[in-house]
Length: 77
Figure 1 (cartoon, rainbow, N blue to C red):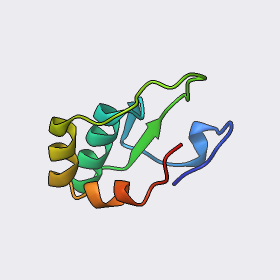
Figure 2 (figure 1 turned 30 degrees about the horizontal axis):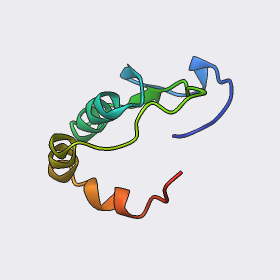
Figure 3 (figure 1 turned 180 degrees about the vertical axis):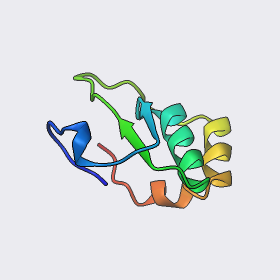
Figure 4 (figure 1 turned 120 degrees about the horizontal axis):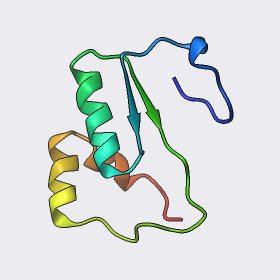
């Protein structure tokens, strides 16, 4: 489930709320979802850029999670 804006916790059921949509938060959310948990990923965008690249170690983690190919189709900002 994805939405933008304000929402009430009563609008959906979740087992886990993960705070932060960075690499670690996304990895945790994906891992929990693969285990069958209902996950809500909460992220507050920053007005500044916080990352300009992806390290080799992060690429390996994305590859093992099956997500590296998905990044190849995301246009640069």
